[in-house]
Image 1 (cartoon, each protein chain N blue to C red):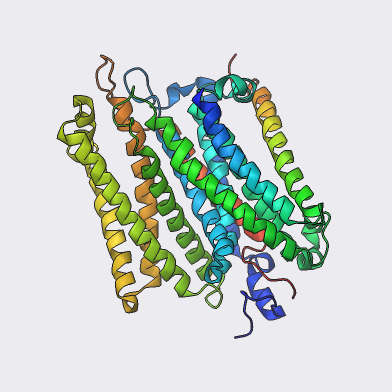
Image 2: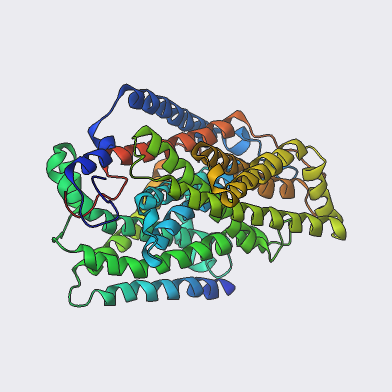
Length: 433
Length: 63
């Protein structure tokens, strides 16, 4: 093989391969980018309507109905998906898992993009977003008691640490680019501020400690402050649970690993990186994803048994709406097609490696991601439709404005990722060409 | 005031680990300085963008 991207050196041909997204832009890129831009524009229009006419254009209602809907589900989904990439990157550094090094930066960028979309989702849920600065203004008063304030604090901290981490580790790859791509020379120069050749060793040592900080933050964010928005509230049936932390953390690990598999699989195919992103990467991640998804199924079973055996009536009503009520068709599709069959497929591949199929693994990971999006809706909505207070049960069907905004957020996420691909190397190139 | 305990529980280890990465870079404070500056500037950026966004939206959201 011409090169070993896990090693220190790299030849020019390999570097050119890995810089393919920066070197070539075909028509498909512009067409796909144009479609995404249209969807983002539509998001802008839908948000404008929501801003000028209020949250009445959504299907969210209170006190009868759901005061939170797909926006909050989308926030949990993106905040959770933000963890896998940084977790893989941290694991590469902490445990020397060099096999996974080619996908580490893909994951780091996924983290940044997902955190941005999580922040956008929760901003779009606000009835008066013009008062958003109150979040900062009253932070000292709120942080003592409000899980939402804890969330904002930890998410901002996680974002700034992740993006600074990415900046440090990408610097060495920007040096050869500064001369090769004059169009972005100004940007590379800004990012290379204070650069000195040979700083990589020092960055590696720093990154080791920062990786521990990142892993700790992942646990405290997805297994702590986000689930505590729900798990600490006895006022809503189905939420008040000590299990919320582990439950959310397991979901976050599974959905984010699935996202890394899908992103790496797509980039590998589109940019013909079969030589660099080996099937063994997908085998390893797929094996882990299969086990963790199976564990999530066990947690779901434990939750449902608790809700059905001798729980208060309101808890039983939520379980009934999911298992045999109006939400059951989608719920069972999520459980059977999204989680059970996908994890079964991945575990069979782990037991019998010769049955491994790359496309099957990517497909299973994709199904798990979709299933987790709906699962987040099932966490948020049913509990709000059946309140403990003496109000009748409500209904919730997202309006076209909500669907437009959700689709627009996904389009924006892909667009931001594509823009990064066109400006920065998504695979670590090495220290010298 | 459980929130102060939780925020402390999160921030103290993170600050300790970031400090460890700074101490690890013995002899040169250039890279740790850049890293810490980047984190602080981004936090300031977040606060400023919240203020700017809030102000801008006042022209769109009916008052």
